[in-house]
Image (cartoon, rainbow, N blue to C red; front, side, top):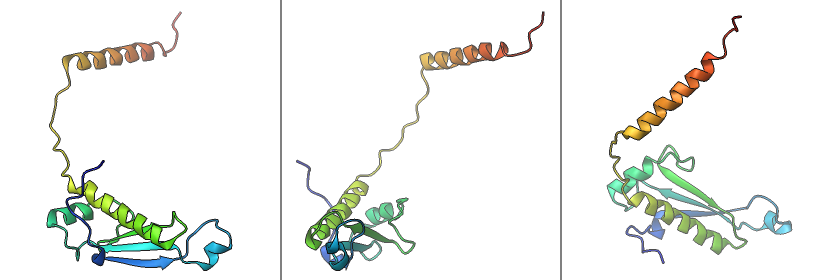
Length: 136
């Protein structure tokens, strides 16, 4: 079981719009607005500033220039299930950025890896040296 989220997204800060879903679905898809557009304004949210900064730093096509995260949920046939799905996906994104990235520690290549690299380079050099014109 996963541990509960530290930073819960307040549902009052999320704007839901019902739209018609795309794709196959027969007559139902043409007359029922079962898909959900979720809009979450990161700047206006009650999340901590460091979480907001990480959300805004995401290179995600669902993030607008104004700092609004837009998710579209159309997996299910019912509007309520799509709404729940969109909210769960938003919460997952917030959970992913709530864990700070591990700092990278610089390391040096080992002696063996340097030797293997140089050996590979010399083998390649030998192969290429055989490609020249043949002198009789």
